[in-house]
Length: 472
Image (cartoon, rainbow, N blue to C red; front, top):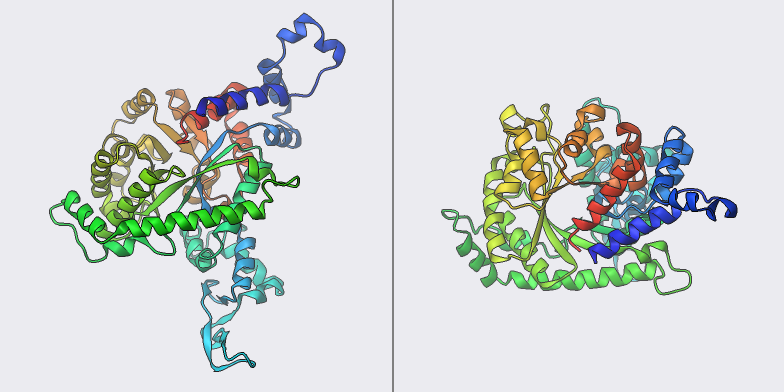
C-alpha cells in the first residue's frame, strides 16, 4: 500500500505539475525525453519567485501524507466558536475560556426543565454572543489561535498551548465535525493520507483507571496486570465504538458515496493514540497501556505518541521513566508502532542540560521510528553522530516549520531542516496544529521552498518519505 501511494504521488507529479505543451511540441522525440520530472523541475524554478504561481503549483502537487497533525489543534477557532454556541456554552469575557452553563433554579417555560444560564457575576456570557459582537468575536479568535499574536505579558509558547484549554469544552461532542473539517481540507489540498493524533478515550478517559495505583520499583509488568484486572479493555472497547460512530457521521457530513462527495472522501485516514505526558506516572502508564491495547486490536490506530508541552515540569522530570515504559511495552506489543515528540525545545525554554538527550533517548531507548519536531538536534550530545545514526536507522523527522517558528522562534537558518537534509535523515513536512497556527500543508511546502530554496527532487523525496514512513 505504501508503495502504491508513493507511486501514485510520483505519477501525478509528473503528469500534472507543469503546464501542458502544444501538440506539436509533444510529438517530437526530444520533447518526450525532456518531459516529466525535468519539465516540472524547470517550471518550479520558473515560478519560485512568483508567490501566486508558486502557491498554485504547490496546491496542485500531490503531497503524500501529513504524519503529524493534532486533531484538536487542526480545527480552526471559528468552528469551535460555532460548536460552543450550539452547545449553549458560556464564555469568560476576561479570560476568553469556555465554561459550562449553570442550571437555573426555576424551570423555564412549560417543559419542566431548568434553563442553563451564564453567571454574569463570574464574567460569563453566552458563547453565542460572540457571533453577534464583532469585538468579542475578534478577541476570541485571537485568544484561541496565533492570529494577530504579539508578545506582551505571555510568551508565544504559552499563548499557543493555553489556547487548547480555552476552547477545550467545545471539542468533546463534535469529533465527527472536527474530522470532517480536517479531512475535507486535506482533500482540497491534494493530500492523500492523514495520521491524526487524538485521544479516542476522551468520553471515558483511560487515565482514570490508573489513578492511585502507583509505581512500585518500576514494576511495569505488575502495573499492567492491575490495569487489565481493572478492565481497561472496556475503555478500549468503548473508544472503538466512539470512533466507529465518529467516522460514520464524518462520512455523512462529507457526503461520501454520493455524486456530490467532498474531496476529503478520497483521503485515507488513520489515527495515532495520544498519551498525556504531564500526568502522574501511573496515569501516563494507564494511557500507554490503553493506547497499545487499542493499536493492537484496531487497525485504524496505527501508533502511539506522547503529547503536551515537552518543557513542562513533569514532562522533563519523567522523560527517562516514560522511555523505559515505552521500551517495556514495545516488548509486550511488538507490532505497535511509535512516533515520539522529542526535541520540541529551545534554549530559552529549559536549562542547557535539558536539551541534550530527548531525541537520542527517544530513538535508542523508546525505539521511536519517527521523531516529531526534533528541533534541538544540534544541542544533543554528539549531534553529528546522532544525525548519522538516524540516517542509518531511517528514523524520519516530522518537520513543522510554522509551528516551530511561532512557538520556539526557530526560522530560516536557525531551523535544523538543512542539517537533517545534509546528513540524509528522511524528513516529511507536517502541519502540527494547523488551526491554532493558522496554516495548512500547502503553505508549509511553500514556506520550505521559499526559505530553503528546495529543488523539485527535494519535494519529491519528502513526499515519498511521507508515504514510505507512514504507519499505514
